Amino acid sequence: MLTIAITGANSGIGLRAARALAATGHHVLALCRDPGRGRTALADINAHAVHPADLIQADLSIPGSIHAAADRVAQTTGHLDVLINNSAVFDQTLRKPHFTPEGHELFWATNHLGPFLLTARLSPLLAAARVPRVINVASKGLLSMPRIRIRFDQLDDPSWFTPTRAYYHAKLAQIMSTFTLADRTEGRLGVTCVRVPAVRLDPDRVAVMPWPLRALYAPKNRMAVPAERLGRTYARLATGPGDLPGRYVDEDLRPVRAPAFAYDAAARERLWEVSQAATGDPVWAW
Image (cartoon, rainbow, N blue to C red; front, side):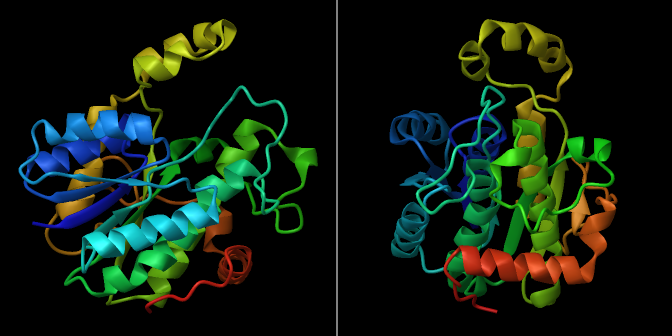
């Protein structure tokens, strides 16, 4: 039995992965932002779980919530075999950027800084596992942006914000942090980032969209990959034997190329330093 923490486990791919992993005998720690939705998801996960999953509240845009969640995980288990950084925000209805109390743009805080800090805080528990793994998540949509770069001098600048730009900017950072963490922990931690294609949204997610967006999204949603299939991808990465298939893989676990900027070693190191400073210089186990 592996102990596996999954962020965003209350819906979409995270819920499907949590459900599959719990049903096959693993101890799932379901990290969810909304306690009410989290409790509903937990009942779903545990309906077929071999070992009951645990719910842990975690808002990845709030450092205090991340620290509290990491403490709860440590109280629940003495080691962590797998961390799946699945949770992300991609609210296409936003016309203006939102900022956290710390002054960070919401997409950047939730989709990059939050997973970065959570991974650092959980690193002692990962280091205590026999064969620990970290799974980050990026997007196939980055294929349409081959020249995308990290805006080091405009990380929280509202002038360039659109939901799409902010989302893919943070996803590029996830790939780059994956590469850096893999370099820093080689031989001690398995690290990969999975390139997720367009995912079919759950009906409740579609229902809350403004009707023009819902109408535009309907054809794309019908063609999108079912969340169940991608949940199985997460589960295979979390529990598969041997080494991980690569540092950046597609939904079929085949190694793929990242955007060119992700291979800039100096940029990756700068991003790591910027992320460390923005998250309070957390201590890593490696």
